[in-house]
Length: 217
Image 1 (cartoon, rainbow, N blue to C red):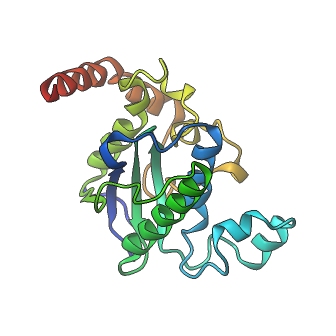
Image 2: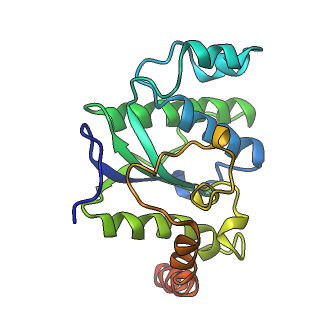
């Protein structure tokens, strides 16, 4: 069965990491900055830079004038932010939309990070990787892989304890106005079944992660 997709786009797993395993998210504020960028730069022609948007006192009025659901480059199906890298599952809504989107969020975060931590130079390791999800089954497994990343790296014991992925959105634990993903048009998620689906792989993925790390030592 072909993976569900919009009329305009193909679904891709996007992966990018920092230079030499450099820690690019050091605290909650850093993670929240990236999450804000992911949501803000979905629109094709943002009327301002994110840093300027952040300084606005009346953000609600801004959203009324420039709704983020209008004329999108991409839709975010799932995501996971990790200390040294990030995973996204995106549906491309415009031609070359993913390339433009990734350039915006990565460049904006680099400026933020370098200013905050008084450093210079690039932050990300080369060009991001992009792999299509060709079937619905692939897409389900990809979301599970993303959502188990924090447990595989022993950051938390349960995936719902990691605040910086879309897993809590999939389980309905995040209010609608705080969500940044739109997976409803791509996957039929029944909350308890999806939780069982993810947890059924928890120990296995952790063991595979250990084997991979040993092979690289």
